[in-house]
Amino acid sequence: MNSAMTFRSALAAFLLSAVSATGAFAQDRIAVLTHAPVAAAEVPADAIVVNIDKMKYDVPELTVQAGDTVYWVNKEVMPHNVAFKKGIVGDGDFRGEMLKKDQAYAITFNEAGDFEYFCTPHPFMRGKVIVE
Ligand SMILES: [Cu+2]
Image (cartoon, rainbow, N blue to C red; front, side, top):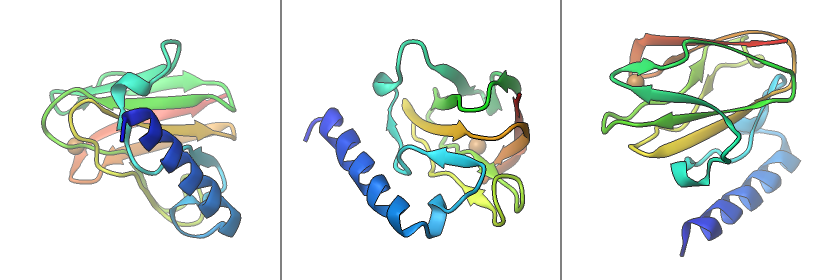
């Protein structure tokens, strides 16, 4: 299975899960294209990207417009993710899948606001997306 097929399979799985509106995707203020990480090579050339390297998010404070999609790309061997505390993106908390080296994770921000996030296993890693 090539990576493009994997991406489409994950997208189909997401669409199915969106119908039931339960679990990790039942968040009010964001949308996650695929809960499974995608290869960094699949990130569009014009994407808004936050790289993760040397135990840091390289753009710790990022400003975007409502409707924009942000891609996080892990550049190092240490696995990282993107997580939000309870109440930030919905009623519950949100924990993105762990990213291995050269894997990406995309979140679309649908509403204006400040969205502070952190890395689940390294809570000293923090960032913020400001949606206008
Ligand atoms: Cu981390």
